[in-house]
Length: 401
Image (cartoon, rainbow, N blue to C red; front, side):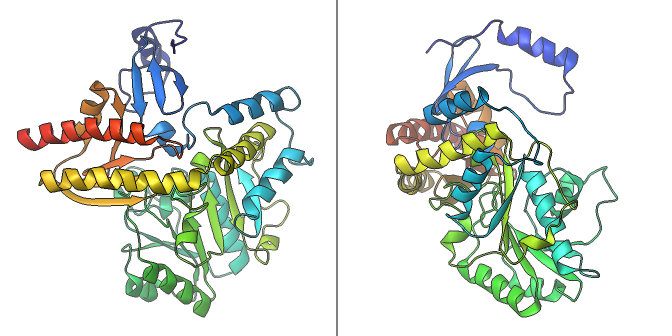
């Protein structure tokens, strides 16, 4: 494939330096084209992308069925407000809820979805019940409500006062949750697998304990499935691994295969608490995102990608266990489907740059964790290719630490 660049990477970088606020740490590469698990920069160099779109590109780059759905939709409707009905929104709502439960509200991002879920929980609980318990190392978004629910002080720096009513418990500590929960608690919020926190997987016993506690005390259980939705873990939604059902769950990132889209789903009996005028999202449920979401569901089912996610997760595990047996810097391996984490005993960030130099794109999070969110349709050959490069990099890091 030939990259469709009209200017060099350096030309683009200079424009960013002049006109774009520099709040992102960017690598000196301008990506101009993508297909499947590969992207190309302006100079035509190819990269294997094991972290496509920070997890948004759940089918890789430019999946054909999604591209076609967007092209077809854009010729009929680009945007209409939610004062009207649209066919695509109804069809995508059906696709999500028949694979989970309840009713759905559409937004544009994970932070928006979490904000809406928190508002719904407070509205449903009624006056005097406003507290939300969330967990250390969790991540729920950058808007003020979602940020206040994020129990990581580094994201709060310089932004106080936060939204009141949020309390934090150690992830996995049921007794700590029980001690925090009181008559003012309306909800417990957590990720069924913590992503940004380092691919932390809770036990089913912990999740069942939370469900039981919520049932006993009339508290809503909210799962933040922004990263775990749409087959990422090998099931449609992360909660489906545990055998329990939350009252509300949020979704975004991969839900429309790279098109901006977020949502939350709630049980039927909770939905009426979100009354007209209490919440809205101007672009939420827009026809382009809905068409992309429907095509995403169809692609996952037609190509058997839930099963592929499980199989390729085990293939990553096989490679990572071999690396762990060889290198003492590998402390732990945490994998659920296409959520792949390797914890090191040394900082993981240098591995990102070293892999990029060798043509493989990865991520590091929580200081010491190598994090991958490959697309569900990654091939065995691509897993092997990426793991070979990562192994080389980790050997180099182990010998120079």
